[in-house]
Image 1: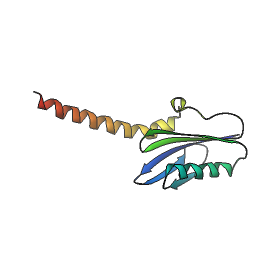
Image 2: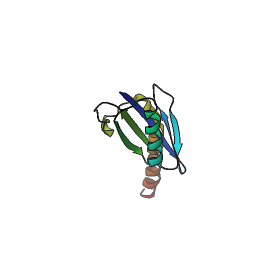
Image 3: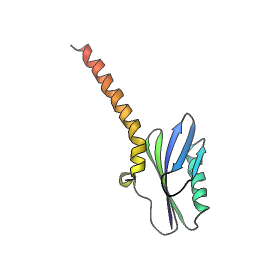
Length: 113
């Protein structure tokens, strides 16, 4: 049984993915659907059996994709994905958004003084 975890990012109109640990699978495609198909095929090149997968958006431009080949296990739910690499790669984008929101709140509060 093989478990493959990918961090996916959208830049412009292109989706790209990189395996988080234990391998060097990378792919890119023009849609999230095509990217998932490529990643499943890449996972099947190393393992064989029943495939189960889950694509979970973290932000509109980032996602986690998990592929399990063989066995009867189902992919982890989005809320149970606890991979430090995934969290570390998505956290900077979330922090930037927080800072932007905090700055914009300060701008608005000045209008009411």
